[in-house]
Length: 342
Ligand code: SF4
Image 1 (cartoon, helix red, strand yellow):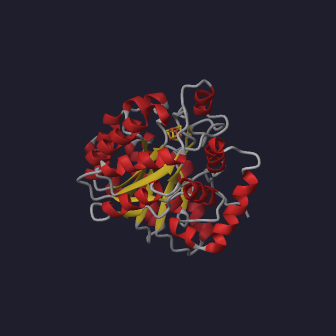
Image 2: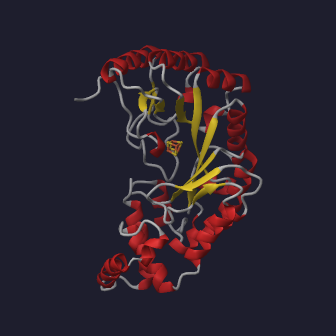
Image 3: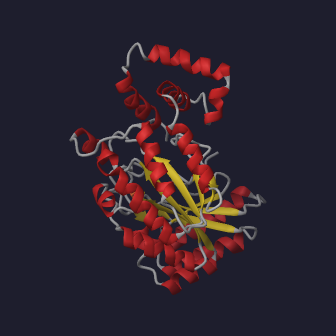
């Protein structure tokens, strides 16, 4: 049975068990070159009345389900007037009294327009976790992918939210600078993350989607994909330059190559670097074997290569693939495989 209230198309990985309440439809910007999430959806604000009716309908629909977490869909709850957002949060807490965490995407372009006092009011009303699509700390990369915001505003808006008491999760995209800007992307992203010291750093790896502006840039020769190895070199440079932070860092999406990269700064930094170095120091044939095995879902972590049974499966696939692809073309195939992942 379809839910008798509106649901948006996406939510963060960490919100799989959360109550979903839609406050806006689509994304008001919708112009980032790498993003096709809301491509064919016009942005609209939902009225306060509509959202309130949905909260009541969700309570009836779910009965006594004791939700402890709620995520506000879609792209930009901070475009709502502060009083309206606070009213929605108050109603949510009254209707679902067991809620401990209410979260939303935090778009820097809109957050920057809220004062420190407004951010505190919103946090006290219950919105206590934000997923921020920082993507990069490099102004050149942000401009090239048409993010519509600069690194200074990303840093200020996130720090303001953090000071207000919100838990901040910053998402970054490995490979977003391409071969042209990978070092600057890593170094400037580390710099901004060091300024913010977010609670969570979540890593995604670029997969260029059909219909995206980045694909057009790629075809025009303005953006050049990195190899899987170069993306790990980029991540190593990023991790090496993360200093003075207390964030939890994780590769947590299946587009990422090394899912075991997960740990708490500062104590786990050396271990994260050791995992990256382990991949980078693999013999060429082992590196190809692991990368393919991960991309076709046989391996989940580097240790899985030790299993003779799994290794044989990947070797057999590699033999077939080499009938059609030269070693130089394998990275194209790896990208194709990861770009299929939603
Ligand atoms: S990345 Fe975020 S801000 Fe950019 S178009 Fe997609 S949803 Fe909108």
